[in-house]
Amino acid sequence: MFVGKGDAIDPWGATKPQHFSCERSFSFFRLVEAISREAPSAEWVLHRLANLLRKFERQHPKCRLSCRLDRAPTGLPIFELEDKQLSRVLKRPVKSECLILSFFAAAVLDEKAFRDVPDDQLLIHCLVKRIGGLTDPSGNVYEAFVRPQLLLNNFLNGVREHSVQIGGRRFRMQAVYFSQQNGRSAKCAQSAMSMALRAMGLRLRDGSEPTPAEINKLVPVALGRGLKLHEMVRVFRDVGLSPLAVDFTKTQAIGVDYRSLVHAGVESGVPVLLCFVTRGRQSRKLETHVVTIFGHTLNTDTWVAEAEFGYGVAADYKYHASLHWCTHWIISDDNLGVFFCLQANRLTSVWDVFALQPSSDSCGQRLRDWILRLPRRRYVAGQLREFNVAAVVVPLPKASNVDIRSAEIKTLGHLQHFAEELRALMPEGTFTEAWWIERLVRRLTAGHPGPGPILRTRQIGRDAYIAHLRPPGGADWEQRCLQPGLITRLEKELPELFWMTEYTLVDLFTANRRKLGEVLWQPRWSQARDMSKGLLLTRFPGLLKIHPCNSCIPTGCWSHVPMLSTAMQGDQF
Amino acid sequence: MDGNGHERPDEQGLSELLIRAAAKLGEPRPLPESLQREMEAWQELAKSSCKSDLQMSGPIE
Image 1 (cartoon, rainbow over the protein chains, first blue to last red):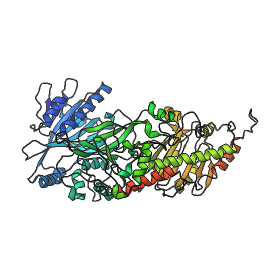
Image 2: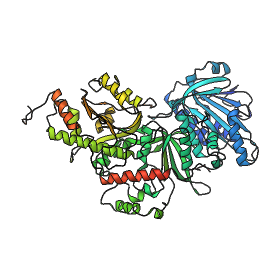
Image 3: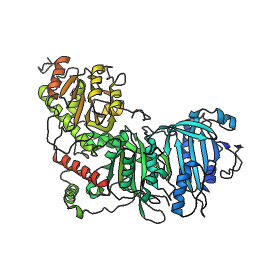
Image 4: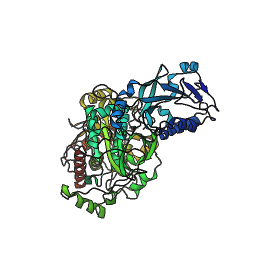
């Protein structure tokens, strides 16, 4: 059935599929209002989806957007478990009804066009659920699959192939999965974890899809309330992951920058759960909410990234962290919708009062040291307020160290050591064609007036690293490649997973997205007071050192090489 | 020879110098005390966070 411009929209009353053209004269507002009359919590999320569609239309003026609306049969098996849990929480029988909302980048205005439309024209597939048997209308966006083409920003993890059923036809779509809490049997943590696990293509141990209802089964005690941080850790462990979880409300978090952990997780290609403090609009009560981070945006023209270093604001260690070029995290908030950009420095730490920049003579540093020396029982809880970061969970595949910054500081120390040794052997100006080694040494010299080196850290698997080294992608600027025998040797000798800190110079990073080399670290480094513990491999222009066997191999690649990008990324980063 | 009287090595000579410079890399070197403290703080924080009772409940009212 085709619904024209003036026709009334009755999504919950229709018995047959309805088709709409969503071109300019169509009102998304009218559609969203009609749906959310019966499922009020869905309104915000649906408006967000409509917003993305309108922006997509502006970017693709020739595209003819359309929508198809189906009523799903009642008693769908996917709702069975959630309905059972809702019945237990609400203490009355619950039977959910569901609308299937599908948006196409083509004019799908009748059944014939629907049968013929190619799979890749499906932009959004969304299930809106109405919880029956309640006095007040209640419902939510049970799940949505959103194509990344609707997002105009770069670097996005979590795009997977999903199979969805619409009107008897199965579509395959490369999309990001979204889930909204129903606010009763499942809260934000179940939704955020469901989004993260689906983004990683993981199932629960019994083979079921990680829906909020299935997650509840793993932590039955949490039914009807939000999950606790330790319960979230338990669920991730149950699917075989080794999550790094940090509670930033604890006193020990004084002076610890949560962004380094978030950034390393996102760069490593895993979704990150970011928990922060909110306030109920009616109750004014403080709550903790969690969103899933799928990616970030980089602005290579960011002034702060260079100015903080240049003006001595971040003077504790002499390098630029690549994090400082990241301006936004790309998040899905189960309450508000998909692909939002959260300013990377918008959330603050409750401990910011102690001055996060650890300058040796600052009052904040002395106060922090004094607090950290207190016996544990005297640790005090911080006075939390809205938009304080509460916790970060990075669901990594293997047990790892949590202090990403120490990998960078150790890398810096390692590079400085190399520069000192080289300076003793070779005075400046004698580096022949090895311009990049000379430039690196100069930037590492104390008192150098220009920018310092940039360091970027992520966890990476051996296969991805080896693929990164292979030609043609791994060739240096002069098209020279590592010898195939050397790559094969690395394939045999490197462990399955490790941390990689890439190092480069500011202009190579911002203009070309290229680097001078990288240092590989074991996934767990010991707490021993040794800068070199955990070193696996260092690549310099012209030389590669395999540390466990103390082997130095000339490579002949004297120029810069591309920084690592992964298949899941929308852009080069 | 460059203008300052320094001898410029060829590519092979340069590789040999790099190998000599890299020979000591990986030998034990002391951590700066501030880094040691920071690493310990992270580790302690991660350990205690796994047992954290912080509860996620954020619905929109």
